[in-house]
Structures are given as C-alpha cells and as structure tokens.
Amino acid sequence: MKFTTLSVARKLKFYQLVVFDQVLQSGSLLRAGQALNLTQPAVTKIIHELESYFDAPLLIRGNRGVTPTELGELVVRRAKSLLAELRLLTDEVNAFQEGTSGHVMVGTLISASTSLLPRAMQLLKQRAPGVLVSLRVGQMDQLFPALAVGEVDLVVGRVPDEWSWRNESPMLQVEVLYGEELCVVGGAGHPLHGNPVSLAQLQDYPWVLPTRDSLLRRTADKLFAEAGLNTPSNVVESLSILTNIALMQDQQTVALMPYEAARQFTEARMLKAFDLGAPLQFGDIGCFYAGNRDLGPAARLFRECLEQASQEHRDSEKG
Image 1 (spheres, rainbow, N blue to C red):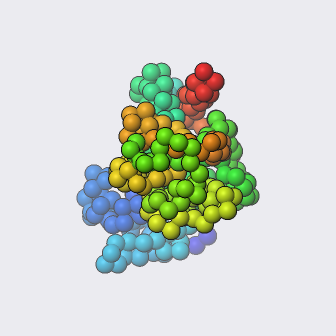
Image 2: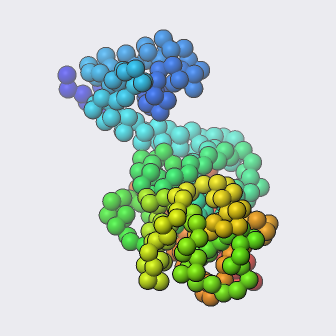
C-alpha cells in the first residue's frame, strides 16, 4: 500500500497520535489510559487502529512495558512536531477568542532556574494570569532536540562556549540575555572564609561538582586546569541545588555555582562565597528558540517577560 498525503489526512486522526505519544511517554497502555482518562481497552483499540492503518506493528510489548518498533519511532518523531503545531493552533485560537491565554513550555538549565525564570513568570502572571507555564529541567543534549521538534517552546540557559551545537541544530537561534559569573561557595561557617583564598587552598576540601555531561562541569575542569591543578579527588557529582546546599552545611564541603543560583542562599546566610580575588566568568545566559517555527502568543509574551527580567537584572548589576 502506497500512502499519499490525502490518504493519510483522511484516515489518520490527531487523537490517535495523542494516544500513541502518551503510550510511549508512559511506557504502558494502562498508565497512558490513566493519564488520558481512558480505559485500557480503549487505548488498545486506538493503537490497533493505528497499526491496522499502517499495516505494521508500532509497539513491542514486553514484561517491562512497551517500546516503539522502528516504524513506531518514525511515526512518533513526526507526531511530536504535528502535536506541537496543534498546541500552538489551540493557543492562538484561545488567545484570539478569549484574550491572552494559552500554554508555554520552557526548558531550563540550572543556571537560569533560580532567579531569571521566577521573575519572568511573575511578570507573565501580572500581564496574563490565564497563561499556563510548564518547566522542563535538563541538559542541552536533552533540551535542544525537544526544542527542535516543538516539545518545548523556549530553552533558557547558558550559551555553549563552542558553537558546534549550531551545526548539530542549525534551525535553533539564541538571544543573549545577560552575562553570568561563577563563584565558589561553602557553608557560612567554613574555616577559610574571611580572607582571600586560592583554588589550590580549597582543592583538598570535599567538593560538589556538576555531573560530567553538563556544560558547567567542563567550565569547572577548565578552571582547575588553568590554575595548574587537577580536578579535586574528593568529589560528589550533583546538579541538585538543595542537595548541594545540604552537603555544604558540614562547613567543609565547597561547590562551584553560578552567581545568580547562589545569591539567594548567600543573602539568607546559608552559604558564603569565597574571596578568590577576581570574578570567575561563566558565560552568557540566553533564550533559545526554533528559527523555523513561529512562537505562539503565550510563548511570545513569555519571551517579552524574559527580556524585561533580564533588563532588570542588568540594571541591578549596574546599580
């Protein structure tokens, strides 16, 4: 059977794709039914209809749940883009009929999630209380593919030092919001607070460092290398801010953190930054978006709020 655009348009239903995508996200027909408020037989019937139409299995059923076949991978990859466009259409129709409303999906890295994003959300809610914001925290290698297919509308985080990501994801664009610094912090009672210190003096203390797959870890390794030092040997790898703060309350453990991520905790006197003599440069924080897809009204409004929040941040730095 040869498929045509017309035959697919006549037979394939968006609702079937919604169910299929949810089955793969949930890992089982039962959990997908619970998420969609459907019975398992109803979900099974919809999947059978899809498989019957494509005349091939889309799922591999096993004791640990379901996984996609090769054809299933192809279908769900394209379905994600279609469903993203459907969500944008829904938002734009609602915004047109009811005023500003809708749903914006934002991917974020740790460096932007503690100050910039909360302020942008406050500004958004002041202007459009009906807009729903969903945050997805992850690393670049997770968020960029999601942005490319429309699973998220915007990604806010550090702009990579090396620009090879543009070759891997040429449709992605970035707007720089502000420049970020790093600091080395410890519990407020750490014995080396109070005087200028060097990385060499801190090297033998317990450290919390970012996981090896993160941009911040590459920056950390580079800092030690430029100081002629090896990366500390007594290390916990973690991107959990709350876990890291708890570890530093032993007044021995130290950590490398983006300045904005650490600031609210230093102001609350839970942490204190060490005086290293000069600021450590982290890089630019930017807002990434897909250049080949128009933003919906909710996402456009949130991007404006991000720009306002970043301007407030730059003004406070000058003050």
